[in-house]
Length: 172
Image (cartoon, rainbow, N blue to C red; front, top):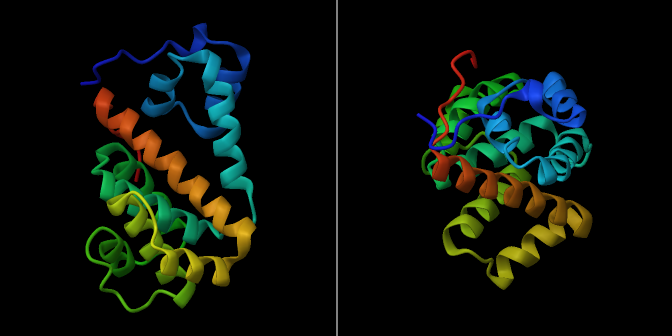
């Protein structure tokens, strides 16, 4: 059970109600709505990350699942496993993302991205070689956006883990 009660969405400002109508009245959003002054900025970041054409939904979900796995975020894993399937990741690929990345059916770029996520989330920084390889493959804009996806879901995992948010029961 969540350590902080979920906010009553009907009592929240219109911007929060609008976001949850579009994205779902999920437990994570109901917890974050307890901080309405920063909720709007956070949701703008999430919307931009999901709407950006820089990464395919498949790659974005692979990154989110890897972060969730490395952060041991029960909520993010529950929420994003189904989304990852819908985005085109196979069960073998999902299992690899949630394990030791032993699947060989990732593209070279996907593997480079997943290795970067693993290094960043475990070592808390990147070696010069890892950074240079990703920069060469992605360019400055995409690399920066990738780091923003990681930071968004890494930070969210910390919040959800600290509050012990229950996964939503109707997520496939």
